[in-house]
Length: 169
Image (cartoon, rainbow, N blue to C red; front, side, top):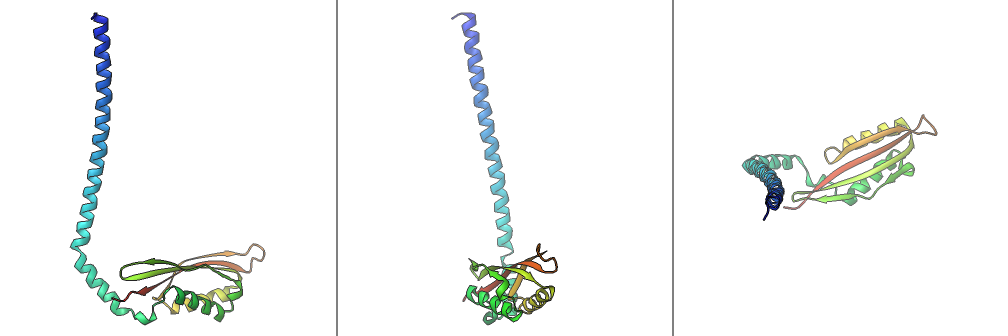
């Protein structure tokens, strides 16, 4: 082999070694990031486990304040909202979405969206009073109010309403 061939072979080996080292360092860095994330997740889980007695006591206290007969499942929530809308004469201007339910170990969480178009401020206030009387069993997650573009003295409102029902334990 000539000096030129030896030099090119050495250069080729160095390039391959450089690429392999870069790849190895990249994988090592990625592995280290995953290790740190797993360590942080384990620490968080351990903190949850360490506080489990506090959470159990807090749950027991919260359940003492809640009457299971007054909680609303999805159907009862929809019916109760419809009744409230009728009480304030808003059922004709209301658009109620189906109830979305998330099931949990202790309770089920129910959410419903209600859109009200062309309503007065007095109707809005009466509906809010009715909803506030149902707390903590029915809660307002969010309310968006905007003026109606055709009639600025009327309002359009979007409600996100939440309720829960306790599972039998």
